[in-house]
Image (cartoon, rainbow, N blue to C red; front, side, top):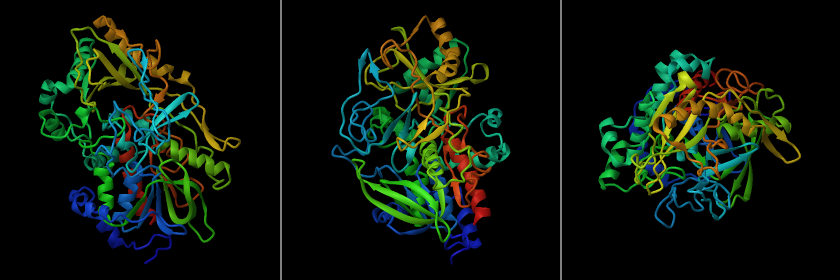
Length: 541
């Protein structure tokens, strides 16, 4: 059957059957998924008509696609990056952090690593241009690191799966019911993502977390709370890595450019279940360039198919009854600003493009004494942090430096309380969206991070490293891993992500979150998407 809203094959019975066992049936991601993957559908065809089109395959898009499919809706997902399901000549899908190659970066001819220098020497190198897994997208004043491929940011993040403290939630999403989030949607997201904690006894003894134990000692000696942080890594697998009974992955330093074995990226969780429904088709290396109302209802979507050099090899025009924007905070914001400014969707809210933030990201390193070695073997998966949010507005992830040599260095990625927000705008002359972030806006983040590290350095008699981000530069204030905002919930959209001005257009990703989550954001993005799509299915179908 075809419903009046353009969705096909949906009845109340299929909706109930599809969503009634949301946390059950984990086995759906197993053999059925593998069988369907072997018989992968061809990419979306020119002139196709689809009930639901999801732009992007990251956390928000994967949640939306799974729940729509379970409700009986056929879904097509469009992904700018590659599928990342085929090993390279070395037998691995992803490149190692210490030996980047063309798989590492998105359409660059030289790497742009977050740590640009080591021991005073620049470490970036020339690579072939390729649709690699990590995009270092440069804007005025900031570089934004993003995942490119089926699975989005889950392919390249550190796996730290943190739910914000409830007392901070109203400052993150003030119009969202906290009871619903903490009783229903955060637990659902954590269950689906496979979130768990490290075994503290193993943490205390394993060689690969010596760096983190040094971080704990220094934090506690200065009076800071040291906390374990949940993760989506398979801890049983990591123990096998350490025992020498499994192929090394986290213990081989794999993280920045993808992890080949132990990390439960979206490919192994939501996307495995998506494939098992039989209702979702995914088109990698396809980039949406326009969305506009179609004459007969729904939306006309223009999509460029690209090759691994980034060249357009085909342009397709498809019609979608509903369109879900899930291209990430930056991708969704840039596209919506373009569509409003160029007249494709002129009635979009003036709030589109506003409220963008960097989650207060700032990095630094400390040079420890010789009696505090951090270990030559370091797990690439961080699992602990220093919590000074209440007193100083900073949470510092004790991060690895998996160089394979002893560095006597402690390294940190801090998430800080930074209220500065930027705006995307359309640059007609250049034909692209600009972001007006200023590097000086990182100063509140540096000030907040110093509430932790100045005190630790004073206590330990240590100093900041100045060789990691350039020459004589202490702070990594040039980047973010956690872009958020640009289509803020209940401002650019209604309170469930429906874009104001256009029925049937939705935002389901980190663009909804206004700039800061107080922790690593992907669990909140996932939980918010679960909340919103449940409402959308129940009311808009």
